[in-house]
Image 1: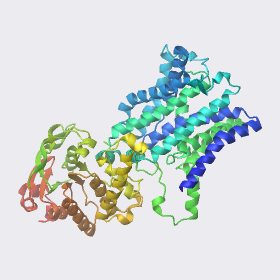
Image 2: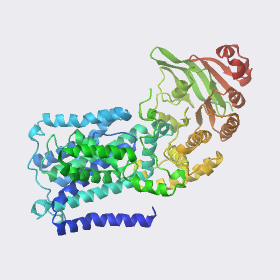
Image 3: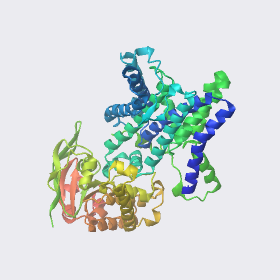
Length: 350
Length: 260
């Protein structure tokens, strides 16, 4: 895409998110949509984290664990220690990053399905831990969390106290959408920098990466840490919006959904997790009217999509273009990240 | 001239009850081509992994310029200048040929990870240098016309060349080539032999494992023969062809396979 088109697309996207959506909601009176879209923004941030682990060649089904940890860290600091929510946000993210480094050191040595299995258990481990620890208040969870306070700098109010706002939902929407934009801008930069190329080298062949001098273990930890940081931040905002957090706020199902978002949007695209989250969230809601058949139709459509579009929804326009122009140079051909790789590549070698 | 660049001393590796490499010692001189040969299962690949530190030896050690390198992390050994290429056509399949070579310049990079991310002046300058260097390497190996091609689309012979290009991009002192001629026809092998000699002329010391005996005999300065993990002979191609133990090890097929 030429630069001008990129800038235009970005501006249109920003205009829709920060002006179009609020305007639409104002004239239609669908205030609930704010809550829905806030959720999509936050879930897409956590999914972006999962996408980073995919980017280094690991299937991560444990993002729910970090969202839960992030939520609890923020909730505990706010309610028990009176720390400002705004301060707990980076703390929750960093705490998750540190935890993920400790967990990642041993488990990131595993590859393919083995890593996936271990991460699958993580969410459950964290849930049981929050049930058992006194500081997390067990199954009753943490409730009545205060809304975010104001941010003042030199007497100037940068962000008003959410509790004084007529419509805190809109404020949460702007907060989450803003963070989502920052998150995906950062991700875009990562993929288009040399950092990204190193991650790709890990994804495609760790042994070769090591033999050309890439510190494989270090890079894996960094990527996993970044991934968990995003999970923690997403979870922290979630806890504040719902003003509560329970051990069941994020379950294994959520972890699986974070991964599905990435798959559905496309593992080869930076904005895959964003598109995937949006479609999955609204697709599920849309099917609500089908009642008892909701899950059946939903899963059938998902399976069909993965068969027809193994590279995700974002590969759709490319696919169409490829059909119209069969003479396209093969160098531009898109390859699936997991599907076409030889099986041995994703399984630990002896 | 005959400075010992790489010294392998008493190298042993057990896998459970199996001794894959048994007390092997030899030295690699500066800028020579040394081949390691032996029947299937003789421990050649294990030896390579030990030298590049992808495996830890049970006993013994590898020294590079007098410094012990066995036991270090593989990327650390690569950083010192001992670089391994792979038996299968191991490349970054999803990248273009040029990107494969550029990313392999990582060893020469002095910029930090944050520098990569934010595009610091140094990182950008390196990026340009690596691009130029990659183009030079691709031209040297005759891969320039394929620079933009996706690596997974390359035919077999070119994949080998790309593997060597990746190795060269790391600016190695010692390049470990694992079966560079495997699966090639006579003509391709001739070209590849030329290529390896040309790499040596760049000042790189080459250690290679290979089954193609005529190619080995043609290209090597010296040969080390392994059988059941033990070193049974070492010498010039002429000496190896006459060595009784080597002939015995290859018994049954030795006549054509080592060319006597």
